[in-house]
Image 1 (tube, helix red, strand yellow):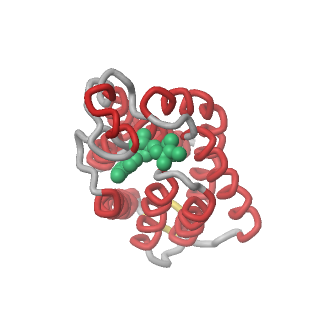
Image 2: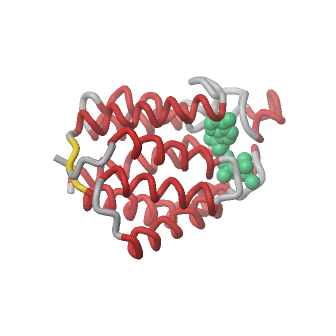
Image 3: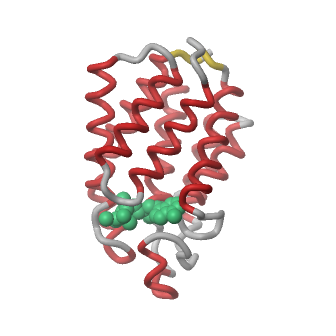
Length: 199
Ligand code: ADP
Ligand code: MG
Ligand code: MG
């Protein structure tokens, strides 16, 4: 079973990974965006980390709802409301249980990803974070490791796609040939989850 501490460690591991990879995420956002994805998420997850330290929420749901709220309020770019919605909706789906199962988390994350698709209007193949998140939640029914691999493959598979949502879509065919920054950061979020589960 997964408790609040597990979810705090997941968010902390994501913050560390985003910090390590911030320059690369911003570099990916340079040719097909406005070169701020790494700094956006770094700011957001730094706020998540300090809010979790200050407020110490004591259920899995409360950890994710708090994290999502921080991302929405501190990240100006498109990714803030989208990742914020992902975590908030996932947290709400977990309810107020003190511990949740792997299957509860998989179902809740699916609800979170569905909420991101509703908010942003992106479907798989549109060259967004959805291209990493959907395969990851599909694979999470098997294992955390399978979810990590699926997210990484999903992020790599965005390179030949033409963007249909977000800033990169303004480039039309010129968005082809570049890996999507948001799909790349989504793979970091899923990898941090698998790392936390593998302890
Ligand atoms: P901005 O484009 O506002 O500068 P970021 O650079 O932080 O925001 O995030 C860009 C990423 O957000 C993209 O790489 C893409 O993965 C994701 N994204 C943008 N629009 C959407 C959308 N409508 N649905 C899902 N993901 C999106
Ligand atoms: Mg950007
Ligand atoms: Mg921006």
